[in-house]
Image (spheres, rainbow, N blue to C red):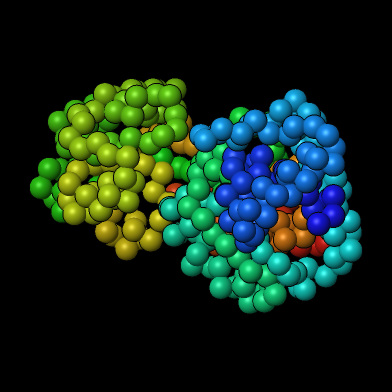
Length: 324
């Protein structure tokens, strides 16, 4: 095994946190990864990893080799990018991580079009939301709600979600429709216990012109299962404040938006996150183009999602052949 390949295995093992996970991502036997690292240590006469039964951690020498190895792999990727002139002939595997709502409503319904456009490219989509999972799973591109703190990554804002208060007609016919945020305290409210954000999730903020109201609503039901919360609302369980993701529920009349004269600030944004390289990988560029198209077509009336114009301009440049 050549030295560059051994260095690649070191980088993958460090990212994954174990030889076994790195081997799984690279479709190798775990013993092959362990043996390659041992050969590299013998060749360089250094110890690269602290090995325990619970943890795999780089030594100081290992961290230095990891940093330089990452630079080597990025430069090799740049060479591959420079040699790829025609995106239609993309090959290999692109690994994309995303949350369930984004996957189910925006990406997956349109992904066959992307696959027809790039028939030689294999696509692997994983349910991921955290940057640390992106590293350990070997994901090339992560679509996530909220900007990551990791400064070693590029995070492009794709769209702003729109908060709104919704309920099924069944509930509103029985309980009445609130005409002011203050009336929410007399209603059954369904609370999404999301992993992001610092404000209490039972405090709903409303803005109308210069007027601002914050209402602490009853916690009739609280769950971190977003799809479960939506199912409860559709069944007439009560009012929910949420970034809906699916405008068809409103257009079809299955859900009705209330307090339409008020804006609900504080909704998070959707970001596309990928690693920094001198030139953008053609595979990632192609998928970013697709994400821009899918997001714009998903909700053209901007009921639940507002695309970011700078991202749309970025994807237009990609379509015209400009590679940043």
